[in-house]
Image (tube, rainbow, N blue to C red; front, top):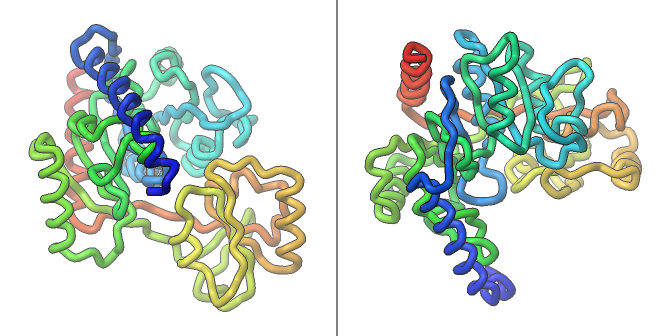
Length: 345
């Protein structure tokens, strides 16, 4: 923790007090939460920064979309549009935001919508002629105005919410006690070889910090990188390009593992802020540094860079969220909730 964050500790106490009061008012029904006659799964975290929400949403899409009409609803962070937008053939990353546009580009059999007002967004989706059977709320753990039927809380390995402090001293958006609202907690971005002893140690630590976790399911996941990179019209094996001189770039939170998977020797890595809007200056820098090299970026950055860099140079590396163990139990819990909810509608 740096000196400035320590100095701001009194503000963290004040911020924590305000968020606790807000949650108390929602818990007691003084501030109204709205429920809907459709299964709603909210995926989010207690902290700011990357905990792997996008691959977790994509996991749920793959799990559910073959049997149900699925819609995702995000706020569309840093998009240039306003209000409710339902993705269609005219949409792009500027209109939807990078992550929703990624969903729309990859999954043609779902609906993708954005709205900062999640209540209004749900109402608009349910007003559609082809209304969804299930709505997945992206980054909505703190959006108490809507009461989801099921909550999945993500916390990153090595940066557990139980170790953290409130903003601005730490990175927590709300107190650790907020974890009690989750039905499932997933420790994300774990080493793929994380031992059972280490998993049990984390379980005990989370249980000690929040006894409400005893009634919740706890899982461990890791980022599973694809063995190929993709351009608009070409596929290259990672093993084939590992030793090829290339330029790597990422505008995501915590890109170290992405670079580590692809980097060879002293290859240059360009780092930009999360959800970065690439300016003409940025694009010129990338072109000057890449020359005739291939450029490999994240899937989220690719949707913003496509069309602005030579397509024969620009590639992206897909990722997936995979569970260390008991994925079938996770799947069963989710499908049981959705099946029961849809039958009771």
